[in-house]
Length: 331
Image 1 (cartoon, one colour):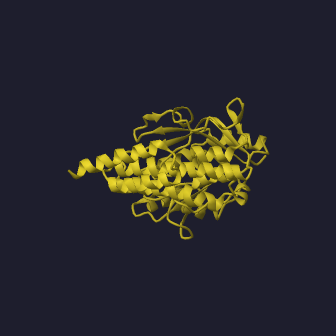
Image 2 (cartoon, one colour):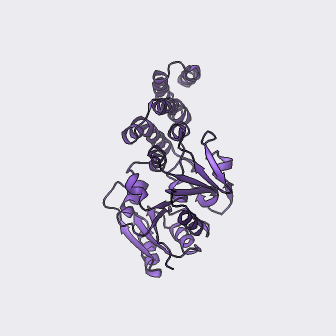
Image 3 (cartoon, helix red, strand yellow):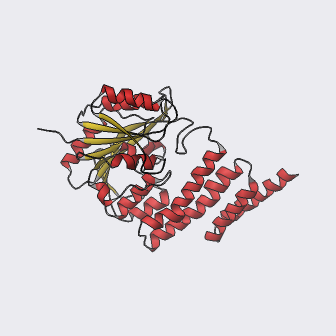
């Protein structure tokens, strides 16, 4: 009996040092019926040469360049999805790895659960030497909001749609694209958006809002490599420019993208505005501008948070504290 094909998309930008290792984790999968599309997003290092070698070594591996969409993880993934085939779709970044059971376990589950649209698993964070930094995103980083209603059957948990969009907005719940296996038809109902840094969270929220059936697997399905060049905020020694870009991206996500793509009810929109105010005050003003000694900029954005939620006393305390720090610096 022919097994269903899994179509895998791997975006690549300047990953000559980690790309082959990530691809090797696909080759090592116990499930062998897959096709990998590597999408080069304009690499300027030796990544194109590594890609050519990998394509030549395994006829299940193909490659293309991202010429259709923005130069970002989302854009490169979308470029890869143009050619999608098979029954299931998966994503793996070019610096991460899957445990060898990843595809087999998820294909078997989805084949036995026709009502489920996609399944995703837990994440372990490791450094470049393989040392575990975070053993479980679910347990150690509270990656699953406690408010979500989940029906568990062993390691599998089905997310209830009851208030799930509001909860996801409050907590910025992100199921994670690179731990997940999607049914191919899913992307006809919930398109992947060409946005920077938040495409996976937007996909999660839009999925819940549209009534997609999502299942959690309480088992590690991704080894996430933490290093200084991570696009997300988990990297170490982040520069001011990177921190500011990520913070502004988060603000744009809550201020513009969520209401653009998701039809929110009153409670969901209230949760969005609460989160937006907090992003102005904590994420951008305090964690970025104050952290880098840019007090005047911090005061401006704390003021924006206060304007959205004028009855939050903590915001005023933070404003006064930042004002005192700015005055001390000017002495």
